[in-house]
Image (cartoon, rainbow, N blue to C red):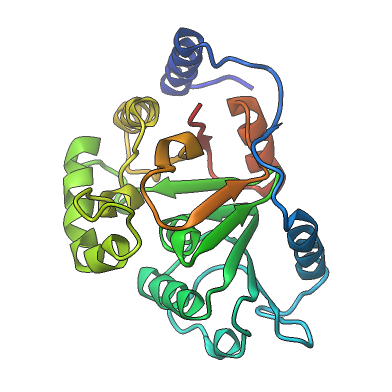
Length: 262
């Protein structure tokens, strides 16, 4: 299949950036941490994979499964029934920001642990990812953020201008982020719509500005870059090791293209 010129140029720039940072490793995921509750989290994920209801929970109400979009009219009653210190096991492409914040606050009230598997995008990454005291991300999972774009076909803004517009939209939610920040003097709200590492900023700007029309550009955030941002204890069973691994995950689950943060 022939590549378009902008896509080919972007791919060349991505690989050039990886080579310049010594991150063009062909290998796959490398374990970051063996969590003492790894087996419990793994069992909870297996339990949720076997359930088809939108938000099922186990008989003891210690595991609550969430698989799908975060809808504006979502019934949140099951979260109220989750026991304190329970597990919220989630796989989501994102959705409504206000609902995501409500879910996050309810999970924090119950001191729930968030367990993410396969993928957590958009509002899931922006809000559920830092919902409570602890988040565990399983091997082979992508967590990715984006700056949602207009549906109009012709671009009216550069990526830098779009970011300024999105930062204005996130301002009503600043209290949500500052309450979860380690250092309240450090602004952390912009992370929901703005790439945080120099690599992803560069790659997002290149991909967006090379395109002829509006598009959502998704990016990851290496945990070594956000370890000092949030009170939430975030543990990756394994953070993806390369863009190749991320591309394989996105193909498997039919996700949008996601920029890997080395």
